[in-house]
Image 1 (cartoon, helix red, strand yellow):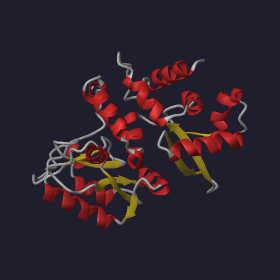
Image 2 (tube, one colour):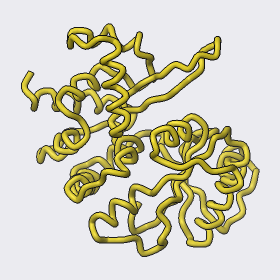
Image 3 (cartoon, one colour):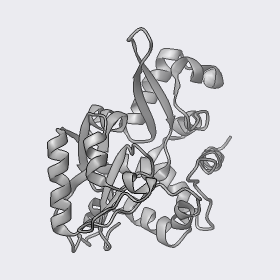
Image 4 (cartoon, one colour):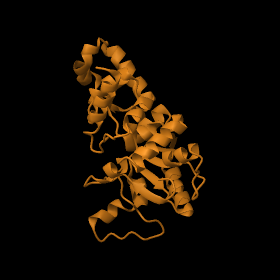
Length: 263
């Protein structure tokens, strides 16, 4: 395959994820992939799935590349370090730690992982893809959205079962540790474009819990905090009037703290 064909196949592969990666007439989605994947990495990413798998499960699908299993694992770790894929460490029944890998969605996923490497060109292309080329519609078309919005300064009652999910303090109090704080990629991206947030000066405010926090801490995407610090972080968000947007799950792995001008 030519280089362009490799990236197109990767685009079509990622478009099968729960939040897809649609093609455009402009080709902006291919440019974004080129910021994140080398051609060789793109060929490997095509062979990954959305559900995490260990190296023994992945290797038979890509052994035609002539990589050894050790070389493949090193390449996958490099891809994770640069924010191209997901990686998790899970203990098996004997207590041994096993690494698992999977494709990452563009958002939430690869975009957030590129936090420390946001160029003006990447941010411009992402903004175009999001707001002009259809990715925002892709994010919102699913019947079950990634986020739930929780109003601050408003009492959440417990008249129905959904309300228990929407008490964000109870989410934090009941979450499995560890806990992490990371920069808001939306605000960092606007900083790069010269349009800083008009609502808050905070950047290091988005939260991750459990396995997601472990991943962020391991690779330096975020810093570890205590449960009490996470609750204090929520108080700061409330002070600045940010909107709390946890992942749409009973036990959400993350909470974004959003504003109207950047997010």
